[in-house]
Image (cartoon, rainbow, N blue to C red; front, side):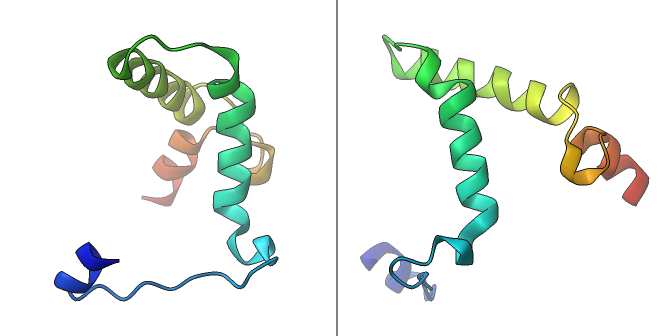
Length: 81
């Protein structure tokens, strides 16, 4: 909070017991935990970062998303441009 205040950044919080106010982040967090974070035991921060980078690339470029019509986020971005 101090860091944000020093930079004149206003923080907004969701209401307690209202995760639906943050559905996109909650869904993403659940996917991250289920698909890779809970699948590995990391020995180093670098190993976790490497796994995160690899998973994120796969998530955006190879894994189809039914919420956007069964295409990848990368494909969706290309069609929006």
